[in-house]
Image 1 (cartoon, rainbow, N blue to C red):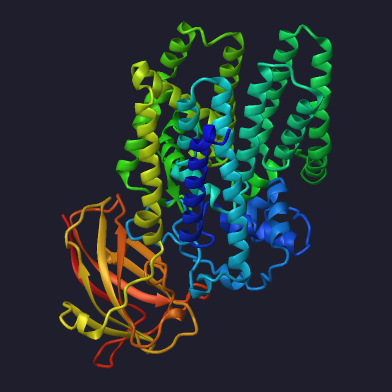
Image 2: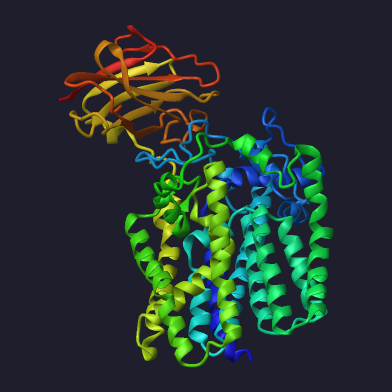
Length: 597
C-alpha cells in the first residue's frame, strides 16, 4: 500500500520543505495581506472577541476584520500562550511603502525589519511563524486533495494524479500563500477536499455519514471565507445528479438535509451576525467600505487590461503585490499552463475513445471544469466591486485547474510519452519555486550595504551638505543626465550618519523644472525603505539609489535640477541644510543639471 503511494509521499515532503523555506525567508508581515490578517488572530488570542467593522474606526486588521473567523480562531488557539505584547514594535509600518506597485528602487517593505525577527523566534514573530506553519500543513492537505481528485477521475492513471499534485504544490505563488498568515490557505484546503468528495460521490451512492461529512466541510468553509459559498451550487448539483442516477427521491431528500443542516448550524450564526450589524449577510459591504469601491464600475473589456497582473499573481507575485518574479518565469509557466488548458479536450477525447470515460466520469469531469468557471465568475463580479484582479484568488480551484492543465499536457503527446510534458512542467515549477526565495524575495528586503570612508574617497561630484548635524549628504551619481517625459531618472545619493537619531527622517528627492515646478518626486525612508534613521550608528555610510518617474506632461525642452532634503513625516518639519563652509543653505539642497530635450 505504502509503496504504491511513494510518489505522493515524496511530493508532500518536497512541498513541506518549500513551505518551510518560504516561511523563514519571507519577512514577517511581508506575505499577502499578512499585515492585516495576523492582527485579527492576535485579537482573538488575547480574548477580545470578533471586531465590529466601521470604515471610520479602523483596527490594525483593517478590512480583514470583515472575514469569517475560523482561520483566525484556529491561529488564536495555537498561539494564545505566546506573549505578543511586542506586536507594536514588530509591526513597525513603513509609511512610504509602494504597495501594489512595481518599482525599480525597491521600497517594497510594508514594515521595517530588525534583528528582533532573527531565530530563535520569540513573541509576535514566534506567533506569526506558528500560524504560518499551520498554513503550510493546510497547503500540504490541498496537494494531497489534488492527488485524490485526479485519482478519482482517472483511477488508472497515476501519472496524471502525481502530476496534478506536483503542479499544484510546486506553484510558487501557492507555496507563498500557504506559508503565510492568510485565511486563503484554509479555504483552499476545504474547497479542494469538498471538490474531491463531490467528484467521488457523484460516481457512487454516498452513505449518510458521507453526506454529513460534506455538509460539515462546507459549513467550515462558509466560516473560513466567502469564496467557499461558491461551492454550494456545486454541492446541489452533486445531490441532484446522485439522486437522478439512482432514481431516488429519498437520496435527494437525505442528501439535501444532511448537507444543508451542518452548513446552517456551523455558518448560520456568522451570516446572521453580519445581517444584524451591516444589513448584509456576507459582510462584504463592510469590507468594500474599508478598501474602497471601484468607481466607475469597470467593464469586462477594461478588466481584460488587468489580465497581466492576474496571470503574474497566479504563478508568483510576492510581498504586497509589489515583488515580481523575473519576467521569463511567467512565460516559462504560462506557455505550458495555457497549452494544458487548451489541450485538455484532446486528453478527454483519447479517454473517451479508449472506453475509460463512461457517464460517471463525464459527470465528474463536468464538476471539475464547472468549479473554476463558477469561481472565476464570482471573482469577476468581486473585481467589479473592488480592485482584486489577482490570480491567487482562483486557488480554491487550484487542484481542478492543475488537473485540467495536466490532462491537456498529457493529451498533446502520444500515449507512450504522455508523462513527458506534465513531468517537465512539474520539474520546472519545483526548480523555480526553490530559487525564487533566494533570487527574488530575500533581496527585496535586504538592508543596504554599509560603506567605509575609503569607499567614497573618490566620490565625485561631492556635496558635503549637513542636515541638522545628524546626516551628511556626501555626494551623488547620476545614471544619465538626459531624460524624456514619462521616463525615469536614476540618482544614487551617498549618506553618512553623524550622530545617533531618535527620530525617523524621510528623504525627499524632487526633480525641479522651469519655475521650480516639481516634475518628478520620490519620498522614502533611507536604504530604499529598509533602513530608517533610528537604526543608524554614527559613521555609517550608505549608497541609496532613487528612481524618479518623470511626469509625462512635462514640457520640453527644458533643464531641471535635483532638490534633496530630510523631514519628519508626522509634522512635515525639515532639517536645516548647512554647506561644508558652515553657510546655511535652507531646508534642502539643489544640485545637478538634467536635460529634457
